Length: 223
Image 1 (tube, helix red, strand yellow):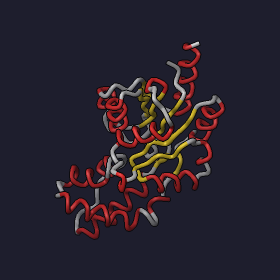
Image 2 (tube, helix red, strand yellow):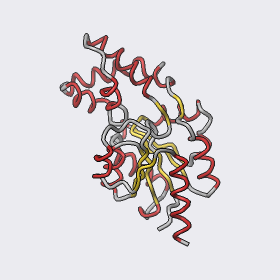
Image 3 (cartoon, rainbow, N blue to C red):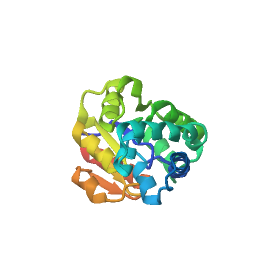
């Protein structure tokens, strides 16, 4: 079936957030009396829920992970959030997809308001029909919970008309679990594309320009 709605991951797909995450992690580690993380560790923090990442990477207890999360946010929510940049070709891709009549939404595990603030900072929020992120007070935080929430808010009942574009295994797994297609991009923060392929990504592309072209070819084949 021809895709009508495109869900975009944010970190690593639309926006390069590594600088802000790295500096905020270093801030948290300083406060906790621990060594600064290396680049690979920082990249593994980008995407999943922070508390889960602290537990996975450092073996923190749930209580310790919550403390680290709060310290990280002290810096990230005031400074680190805006230490980021759009990946090349993002605005052009959004403009092209909107011009072709697609509905476009963000579906990110980052909390919803920061997603909105980042997209507004780069003057691309207007391309989105919905900006959907984590809403932890409503127990919406994992990738699949956010994807399900985005589809509900967009009024989508047919999963075949939806595709997620993301850069990580977490995107691919969330899409697979929900039963929607996922297209991967290679320029983000994933270290092992084999993990994305295991989760059933349709294709992995090096640029969003290639993604737009692929969607165009797929739509043409449907007619």
